[in-house]
Length: 445
Length: 162
Image (cartoon, rainbow over all chains, first blue to last red):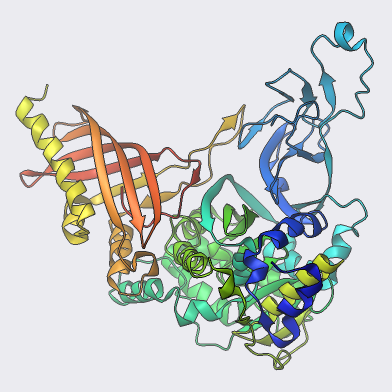
């Protein structure tokens, strides 16, 4: 067991030496549920999931079940899904539209806003002495950034925008949420599966591990796509084979909340590939890719090296992002919910650009469920690695030798600069080092 | 109305299919599918009230995609199938109805599939299938398959066929 005093030794992020005990030590896991998950802003959904008053989705913040709802006045709420009378879950559905939730134990009833509105036999049994204002469902602090909903249990946390930082907001706004292009549309439904491994290990995979993509994990799929494309089959996928130099982007570098984007192609090369891909899809797609890029260039005109799109990314602690370098591929949002040291659940949803033509939305959805998805051809290979790691790491003696996170250590700045954030070479482990830097700060606080 | 012999033939067809899947003889399995097959697996959710249906399914494959999935495992580099899974497809409760035209049948079945991976990792998959079988070249082909898995949070990623 690692004591908190020893943490600095096992998380030597400066040297790129991090012990696997941060993943598998049960005491650290318990600490982390308080010190990390009760302190951070976490993504819980997107406003487009809640279009009408009364709409809600259920989700988790760490191990805490929550309901994300829009009340009858249109206000957003994040409510702990737990009756304050005896602790029963009050909402049993994945998503829905309702005015209220009634507990199945004693019938206490809460409005969709969380307000307590009904207690059976209140007058006779409680003599009307229940203070309804203090016995509603627990409200979690909520804020949204350009539609993406975050929540935190920490009332004293900085504002969401301060938390994400100016650079982080720039990347989120321009590449993920595309506010200037009309924003994103949520395709309803959580896609969920049990995944062996510690939540941090998959989060670090998304925030910066592009080494595995080209070196080993996904080569089988890349090979099949290449073979079938060469044989002339109509494959509507970006081949991810732009012969261009790749870069890594880091925001919150050395300070604040880490966000990372990987496999970036600077400038317009990814646009050229997108246009070629759009031609396989049809006229509407070509028109849209052209129009979209002209508007995008307008927004980005002061940044010469601004990339066209992103491949993968993550926001600390547990949100993964996929963009596949192509707006035609939509956006995949993945939450890694902790379920003990060596198990997590992945909760995923898909978004498409709102103003895209129908055929592009269809292609983007297909991209999601055939790729980085529980039944796709990419994600299960990532999960397989996690399963093998869990097996190899059962014995605590295997946690002693730190893992090697030294890729591009000392070379973090060897790349063209001039856009918000830190641009560096790729593949790199700068983002993993930065991830554990912040994790350590929270654990030591 | 189907004769007993015809029913027997359809059941044999489904058992043969399960056998080929468990033997990992995917080329022969692909031959049992029509060229225009639609293989789908909808998202199962618990919904309340007036909400939109799921925006996309878990799987929506044509024959090309099913073939690519099978070929991925033949590259020798597909980690999810190294070493190969051990599977048993138990297929039961087969019901046969007339199809939309004389060359087709609607066939319903339930399945229980156990998938074993490596030393001790495993998944149990239970669900139902709604198939359309079509008479082609004197034999049967699967022209439509809808797989309804009885899982909300799936036990693992899907890398096998149902």
